[in-house]
Image (cartoon, rainbow, N blue to C red; front, side, top):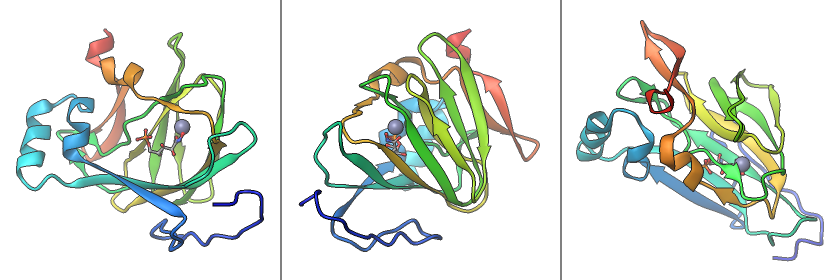
Length: 191
Ligand code: PAN
Ligand code: ZN
């Protein structure tokens, strides 16, 4: 597509969906996320019981250049694997210094973040909240609510996604349900 001409896209506030064919969907099912969850038995059971869709995200087919901004939406469905809420895989940007902005459109969740040095931060996100994720901070979106958690995002199009580092041990903190409420706990793999 020609990225040098202005254009308008319409993202639905409830579903996060954009009807434009320029917006390419990506889907992640329980089977794509098995190793991200602490409770592998619960993950295997969910996969056997129908392999639910955990989240989908949509971005534009834009050139991955430093002068282009990529944008789109992420929609995480409500649910849990074991006691851990449905969440995104999470990543560092390959260009580690590149930042990102998320704006919550719908639902209720947490943005979990950490740096390579081990600084940890996490923020509750509600509709109307915008979060600035600075460069160097890995980020994962977690749906702690009972409805889809939908956020709009913008980042430098050449940022790239380093999933491998997070895949090794996960984030330093987990978000689990305890007595019906989300609680942030230490990931035992990091103890
Ligand atoms: C987002 C994420 C999206 C899905 O566009 O890519 O929320 O999360 P994962 O990529 O971790 O599966 C973003 O942060 N882009 O940089
Ligand atoms: Zn990102």
